[in-house]
Image 1 (cartoon, helix red, strand yellow):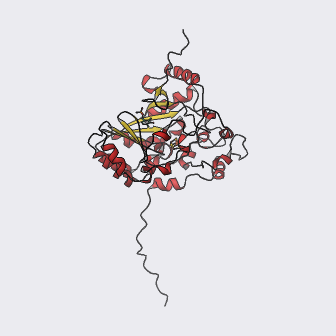
Image 2 (tube, rainbow, N blue to C red; image 1 turned 30 degrees about the vertical axis):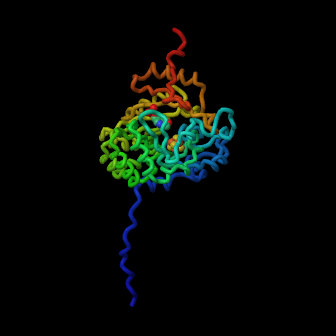
Image 3 (cartoon, protein in one colour; image 1 turned 90 degrees about the horizontal axis):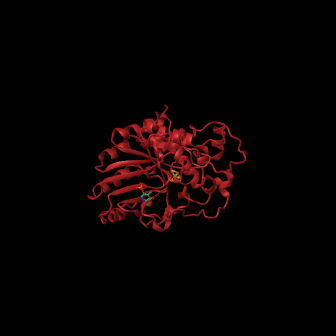
Amino acid sequence: MIPSPPPNNQPAEPRAPAWQRALREAFSRPRDLLDYLQLDPATPHLASALLRDFPLRVPRGYAARMRKGDARDPLLLQVWPQTREADETPGYAIDAVGDLHRVRRDGLIHKYRGRVLLVATGACAVHCRYCFRRHFPYAEQLAARGQWSAVLDEIAGDASIEEVILSGGDPLSLSDERLGELVEALGAIPQLKRLRVHTRQPIVLPERIDGRLLAWLDRTRLQTVFVLHANHASELDDAVRAALAPLRQRGIALLNQSVLLAGVNDDADTLAALSERLFACGVLPYYLHLLDRVQGAAHFDLPVQRAQELMRVLSSRLPGYLLPRLVREIAGRPSKTWIDWERSAPSP
Ligand SMILES: *Cc1c(COP(=O)(O)O)cnc(C)c1O
Ligand code: SF4
């Protein structure tokens, strides 16, 4: 007699959320991305060897928005090293914005009055070549390792703090269980009014906005602001737009910060298209950052005069609410530094 197979009464694996599966499937092998984009690995400016110290990470949905066969695609250039990344440029530091001195052991950075930034994790869904965080010693941050109690005590003990900014890395790299727990504890601190989430994930991994994430957002009493990070209109496809809709429906303010990047978005048409597309997705432009002078990113930098000129052109083309504020981060200042672009206009 053939024994019947044992009944399969193993409990089903709890299924990981779709965004975690999408993250696992992100491009991490350089050759796979090049093949997908039909690019020649010998393309002179694409420096694959530089992926060793800051490795490739590109969600497939983000790669799908890149133009096939275009080695200068503005999305590709944000995630793939160029030869010039290896240049040592004087004045471009490891710690471009002075945060290494500011960050406390528990992961808090309290630079500006009323708001405190929490380095919640070092992980990101995408690795951006121009980012200062590539040099950041996250492993040393306690909050990044998930111990919230010291952080919560610090915040509760400072009556001047009204807003907590979850940052990273990308705070949405944490699970919704962890985030839900943290946000609930923040909501219990009476003087807090606002919760801010600095994240690029809704742009590069729109799957991240799912029911579990909305559930903890729905539970908090804190007024919530999402500051997204997109640099080019092509990053904002219909999947991104759809992912943002439930945030808007909840009355969550959606803002965007961009970095001005040579070769990616350093012309008025591109910046105007970005503002227009953001608004079509329900997002207002907030900051346009001059590049932090981080080692390895000098080739993305532009003279400030060029940035000012771009702002003048933009201001003549866009409604005022679609103009981002041009800023630079200067260590030791009480806020981001607004760069004036009007006064430097040539007299009529
Ligand atoms: C940029 C930044 C903030 C937020 O500044 P806003 O001007 O309010 O957007 C807060 N803390 C730190 C450490 C920052 O770098
Ligand atoms: S912190 Fe933001 S800009 Fe930096 S690598 Fe992560 S997603 Fe990119």
